[in-house]
Image (cartoon, rainbow, N blue to C red; front, side, top):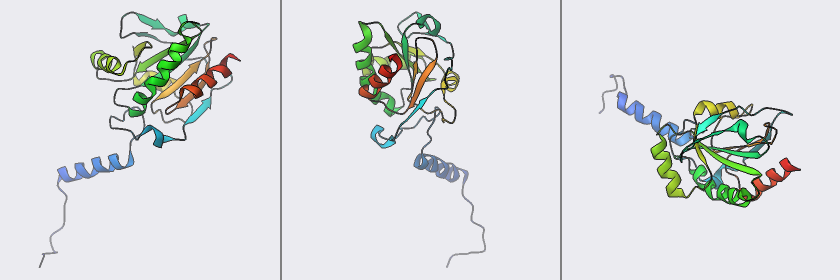
Length: 194
């Protein structure tokens, strides 16, 4: 028969394991989630949010993975699609083909600039290898969680992927949390132009 007079204590390792299992079970949406997010199809409905009537996009000048830098202010006059992402984000990976298609369809007209901004803290080499492996064709910049937070809309948790459309006047036209299809992105760009 078990001695019930002794108190029951969990070892610190067991407590840590239970905490980790709890986090994995609940998920940790947001920019600091280093785990594997759910399948992109399971995170619907996504949220598209129109920006305030005139909300100027936070300026940045960031280094490109392939050399040089991009200054957002220098892109005035074009519509800019900004995709905040990370190498560990499964929906971000699924979105590469959609963004490549939009980039390719607007490259000749030079009316839309597609930019990927990585918030990875693993460094440019890791991000560059991922970009090469996944066949990303649009410019990729090294950003930060702070920059992501500057672009997050009111009431948004700041998860990724976060897609922001900046109009030719430098204002934020819309934000989209979660995966997006090429057709939805093209429709948003058509609304911006028209």
